[in-house]
Image 1 (cartoon, rainbow, N blue to C red):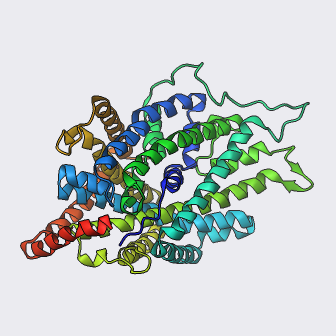
Image 2 (image 1 turned 60 degrees about the vertical axis):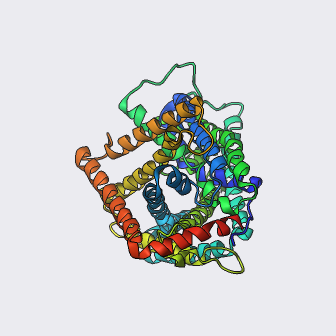
Image 3 (image 1 turned 180 degrees about the vertical axis):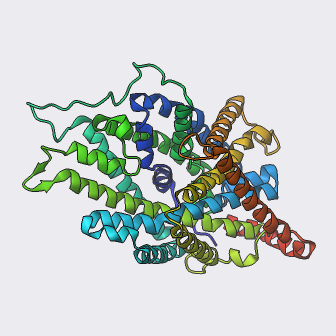
Length: 482
């Protein structure tokens, strides 16, 4: 049976780890001091509504599988399966850069002489296999160990952000003769609302969806959480203000040292550390900006590995839950007798992740192809995320608890922002030679992926499999309630 290893304190840290991504503070910094307005708008229109929807859904359906179960109950089994399918594909593509990220981080840490490591296919494949072997072991053992991996990832993430916050108030390079002068105001409401342009709207949508989505993901582990119905929604509301402060203060820290138009979107953290410790920071032959920049890269790489471990763990629960429902073979539902984890499901997901990592290295120089994959990946998540917001809008009183008018308004807000983000990603306004063709490719890819998912579902529902499906469904409650 599934083991309930997770408590509220674990969930809060896991929420922070899953949601926070420090590269997005660099994207937000491109807006200048009025980033504060966009962050507040994103928090009000999407982040808080997502917490409200999670609160509503998990109190009705505190079941292993999270959003998959919620959409299955409200929209039917096909919609539920396709939602899980979209999330699963997103997850596999999301972790496909683990080898590239690790090799690049190592090359940066060792210095210019070792730059070749970041471009070596052997190094990248080695990291892919080695790290996923480690992730496999952690996931099989389960949250008895896995929760501490998540704690470590969250700690390193918060440590880096705490350093950034400190640099808002302490300027290492400054002296009495040469005080620090910010290139622009790090926070600004005095300047009024930012000018509303397509670029501003595009930036807002990316900050909202890419930066602030993810509070719902913890619910996939509901069967492994003590007092899941209350712990999950409490963790969302406890983590939300911490996450919001990390994004807002981190963006302000960048603008304290770097002009908005000079922000490095690929590495904003080492960039700001190097700038903060420039000049007076290099003492006794030590370039503290460089050292801290390298330390931040290492810390963030470790945090991302912990984050990917959590993503693999949650993705592996979906085939198990689909097996309970008879959509996938019962083979996926077998739990390890010692650890209580879905070992077969975990092994399959890890193998698929390694394949995705290997495929990601081919054609790495084909910029538009990589961009197409990344945007399609984000679009699949938008589909999954948008369906979650529709639940309170159509659930009515069928499940014993009618959503309030305020919750419906919040759900509509979150849904519209998700649609906006999907539209801005499908038809980008920059960096694509033919936006219409690019958007058409993304839509066709998403349709094809969902048709494959629907084919898998329909094959599982053929009359010959009906008895097995019913038997598995009937036995599900005993597994979940154990």
